[in-house]
Length: 195
Image (cartoon, rainbow, N blue to C red; front, top):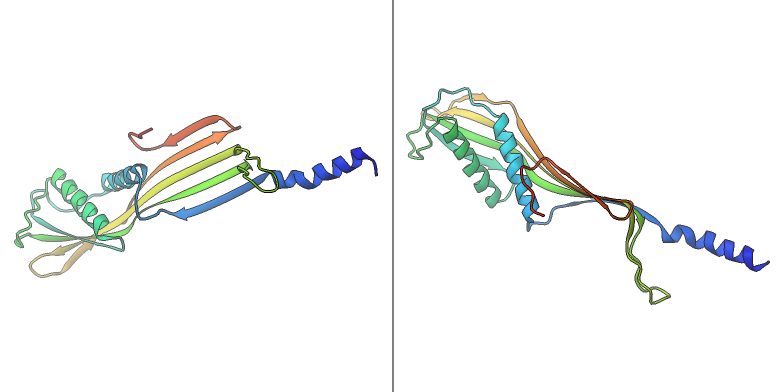
């Protein structure tokens, strides 16, 4: 076997090992980044912008939040809904004399991250003490937050369920990409994004 043939076979054998593709999705860790907090906030804002209550403004309303999320998320949703009710002309006196009880059922108030990568991942060590940087033909990270909620309206004095609103939903996203090793691209529906 001549040297050229041997070199060709070595390159053919090692070539696929020097390239790679991957795709992964992970749940957001409990400690949220600034972007994740903005995504959650604006997904909730978008949800409430689509919401409506078939009650006459000026009425006194008590608010409760039921959610699978943690206490901090529930408190934040409660504060945002209370502010939204005030903007709609309702009173939220919290004195147990309210005409209606509004129970906000939070079906989702969470974020996630998805990553895709095509190219050569960074290589360190191995047989040779040489490190190579990541060479991304295409790489992207997408962060998204979804808020989905419905509201049950009760007559406070009798506890009778008067109606349930439709389910309202809002989504916010931030996608950072790199194409051909160095061309960055960012797309989002956030009103402002920190650098």
